[in-house]
Length: 305
Image (tube, rainbow, N blue to C red):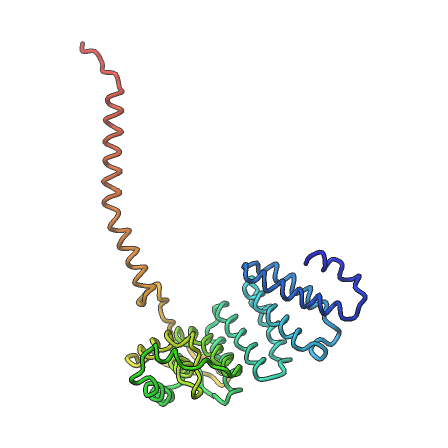
């Protein structure tokens, strides 16, 4: 691919630059699979350079694919601000609700990678409005109670296996909406927002007759946990712009530090380490004694005077 890019300026056929741009996109995707994000960025930059003068009008699909992939690779290369600026172009030029939602979903992911959970939540809520879902950042328990009850009624008497046998979700717009909801889950959880429950319920409870089979077991488990949990963290006041008027809400502890399978595994490893310490100390003492005895045997005895 590199030798084709070096000779790119010699291309004379009108269609050849676009083919070279597509080849660079495929090369970037292969580099991404190998976690070679810097190499992927180089291929994407070459691909964007081969686009025509008005790329969004002349080659919309290719421009959107290159731009969104560029934004994601910039984020994974430790350049989140550049990534957000790139993805803003995809949002502005997005020609459909589907594409705009895809771009918003990537922006949510970048904000989470950046550690800006509140902005990730706000961006996700903006994306949901295109589907007629308008929620505040911190809804009350009553605001999401209807979705919880509808979902519990939906799963009542059902097993995980029976849900997984439902048809796969075919509507691409609902699929990309679910992707945004999935991206929002972590920020909602750590910000103690009731939107966490809303996101889980919207993913689990259909559009009727269709379901994403690959997501159901985890979402059903989350739904069952939510049935017994209520968020007791205080809801912070918000200013007119949607930001925090006072202090930010306390973040939840990461799973590795608290409960859940990650926390249990970490505590088990620590207990195993503590249990192994006496044995290691005994081995060191035995080695020290053995070394002392060997040294004493090798040391010549002084003759008695």
